Length: 183
Ligand code: FNR
Image 1 (spheres, rainbow, N blue to C red):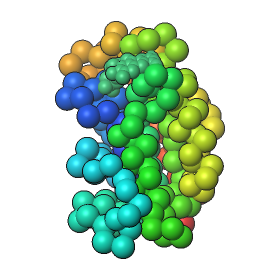
Image 2: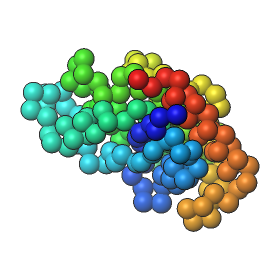
Image 3: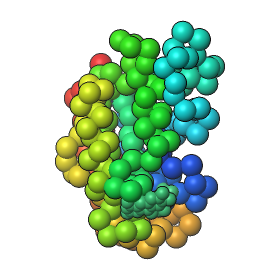
Image 4: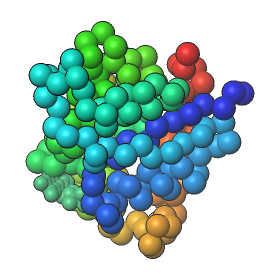
């Protein structure tokens, strides 16, 4: 199997973000066919369509970088039952200029995590609405809403065995999904 490059997009800027820990754990658990790394989004100014003719360098770098990946893994918190603005902003920046979206066609998966009981279900599904328009084949199963995430880690290590086993299954299934759907 070919090695596939995967951009991990974390929808939180918080230093001790649970979702960043989840992303890092998935990078560690990934099979050798996936070469995964976090692509930062906090440097992107709020998208303004007026800038399309002369985009900031951070936009151009982000768009060009994204194009180097075969697939995308989104790790998102839930803010007010939706995705954080920083993640939506990154999605919007990557989707332009019109007709040149850096996201288009890339297979992806969504995992949401929250200290709350329902694991960011609302954010997970709001994000999926965007993925339809972005033309990104999104893995359907296993669904991944990680609740009570604050009880699952010891430092950066996944200490909860059930969560670790689930993450392993999730990333192995994603590897197969990418293999089936990547260009
Ligand atoms: C939250 N949080 C939250 N949690 C949740 O399960 N559902 C929600 O709708 C919200 N809404 C919300 C709004 C805002 C503005 C903040 C700052 C927080 C709590 C959230 O899950 C918690 O802060 C997580 O720790 C955020 O994820 P990271 O940063 O740890 O990855």
